[in-house]
Length: 116
Image 1: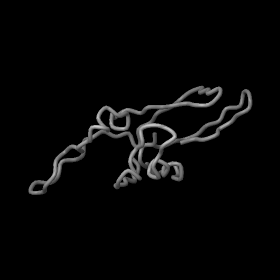
Image 2: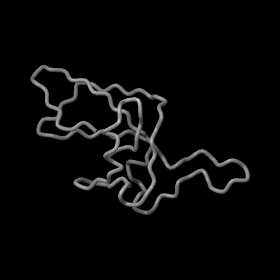
Image 3: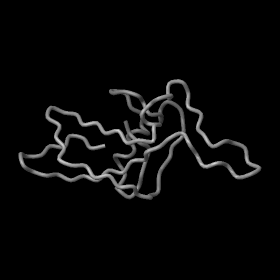
């Protein structure tokens, strides 16, 4: 979500990130409507981090350094996308779908697909 962030020695840089933490549950459909209350995950998706209802953070680079992290639950409009492998969460680098890249273009008042 944040790329190539460099800071000088002693400099503190603050960034806000909004992500959608999700699981396979969905609200039950109304009475008389088809459907269920779970997303059917395929075999490849079973046990993947993007469906575990948790936030997983990854810090990379030559000398990653984080002073503090503040987490806050917020209720914001969320953008969901549906499609084939071009929008799915690719499990490892260097692969990524265009859907995984969308959140980098959102302002902090919109939540998008959780990136990996």
